[in-house]
Image (cartoon, one colour):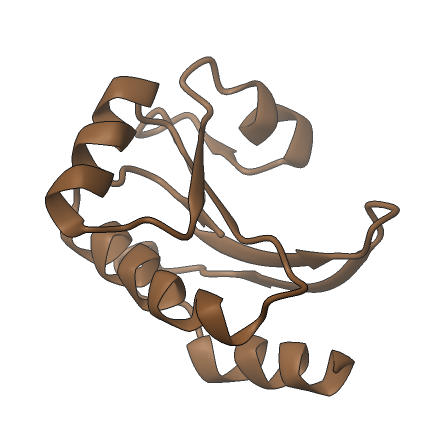
Length: 116
């Protein structure tokens, strides 16, 4: 998943939601990318008790710019959900148009279930 800022309400909610579902999928690696620093991400994980999801920092916006997710208006990456295979092929994607909305959890989780 990609979130603009882990320290905002919707980003925190969606990251925690996905973290709760991680244990169900032992053969899938879950990552959340945010534009926060590594230190900010570590502080958020400690405060929220998130242990099973790895957060990746895109503070330099390299990932966002290369993936077409960088939003210059607010200097963040766009909220989105991606499922890739081991070769990096995109199998599922959701770009959340209204950034104050949460992603469609059920759709991506159903998609993951279909892969099993």
